[in-house]
Length: 347
Image (cartoon, helix red, strand yellow):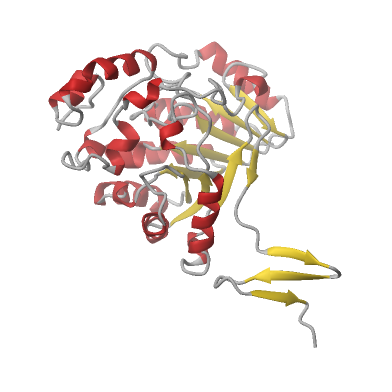
């Protein structure tokens, strides 16, 4: 494949969806954006109806089904947006949403009502300056997180301009970039793009979104290495997805592969209550059981924090398994084999 597939008819023609699903997929496409890049399309096994890459990017008629708990803005971005492009939920950091387009569109995206063609526009020059003025005006803002959409959809020139603006704000010390580009379109991670990421002269971090070990192809690994070798640390965030990574073998392989690529697993997100995503969400107990199974069996380097973004804009909270319990004046603590021990030890 040489081009990104953006229409249900393209997916059917390429063999990624059966022809009898086309009418339903057209209804999905009328509401939510579709894009499948060549780098990810070539990973899909057309003969596997449960292929984990297809499950993430090929639309499903189940997306037309919504539950009463689902909402258009599940994590409350808009309720914490003082100016266009800024989300200020925590005191010391803000999101700066530069663009609302992505190289690929995840079928579980919590911003699916905001991103894609015909949705919210890229920040205008005037809106960008207003967003930067907001950051300049609050000395408590220590970190700026570039997100969207995918900020690495910007040209290297535009990205360097934004990084340069942030470099001039003395109280901003850290710039974090959230992206899927290294796995979705690794060819975009050019020397010019890497140079642009370094232009802020601050501590710059890149956080890669990856959910399955097969996403880390040789090309994706090379793209990540170009950034890491240039001195840009990388972290990862993943979403726990039914039928994609909700078993210990797959999740463990993903986390180990990330660490082998010099990428520290950061967050494992519980699926947000975005419309039409119930078929991809697990339950919290299943996620806790997975993390418990991996504790002690995968290196500490491989352990992410399992988090839930509380609906309504109340922020992330860790929801991993609990190993400590109070027992009178003492504690009991559970080891990775499930045995419990009193602490401090009794004589």
